[in-house]
Figure 1: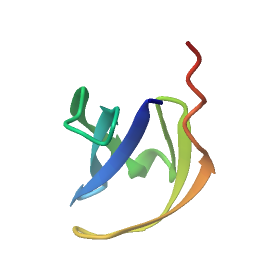
Figure 2: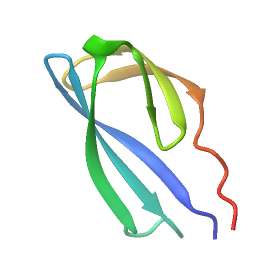
Figure 3: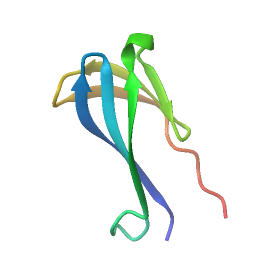
Length: 76
């Protein structure tokens, strides 16, 4: 089964956006999961693990974004 990756928005504090990154196979419990932050005072384009997205608007509970590049394909 191919590796599935996701980024979940957790909220913001001032200009710092909080996210959780997870990797799954078979839509089960994450094999790996950790939190990371992005400071949008440095700009509204963010990248993580090869995925690139533009933050359009962020509140404490919602995120509007545009995907510029998806995660790269995994090769075995």
